[in-house]
Image 1 (spheres, rainbow, N blue to C red):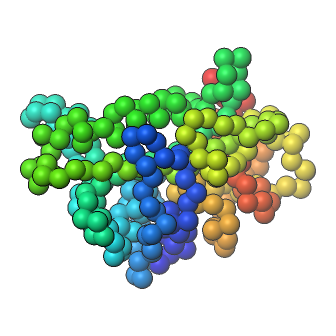
Image 2 (tube, rainbow, N blue to C red):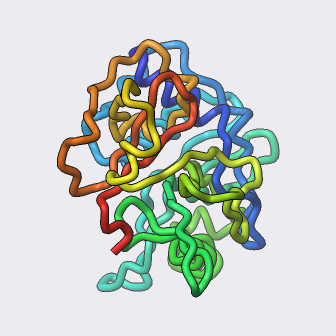
Length: 262
């Protein structure tokens, strides 16, 4: 198994999670998963969301407790209208129950404003509160709202919704205290963020900056020892957020364009 695949799979088993239990769905017992004893064949050259789905599917396929029944199951209100999809349908072989599992891997930067805390993503059009609302009001309620249009075999027993939201919350470099928000796991992975203009002011001149490739964003830095990464120079032009490892720190940094989050 490649070092990258091994690190990614291990990060899914060890956590930590970004979001804790929700009223609509508790967290899936990820710690009971274990890596396969063969090469997983994960393709890192794809969108991060698809890569994470492949990683979790690999762990479920290798599990002795859980049986993966379906992925990305389309939910259609009728032949002309798709209302959503179920990321995973799983059977818990211990209890016999069916589980609808929603998976996401998200990264949010804490921005304090006069209106209060905002949590945009690297692409500021995304934000934690918008994602949380969609997850609670729509994604996790699909099997309840549209049970009668699911495959008939799924209608014969309850389907228990679960969720796994991995990721990292980045506090601003000048923040006095860690940011908190509803349902953010108090033990979630943490990082720091600052604008490119602040780099030279904050870091010593001889600091080493290495770009963390997107397929390794979900992986805690203590799990990526020995993986080579491209060097970055603070004077380079920046038109999007990048995640960095600075020196040998285990705290990741997001460096943003000067006008972020506008």
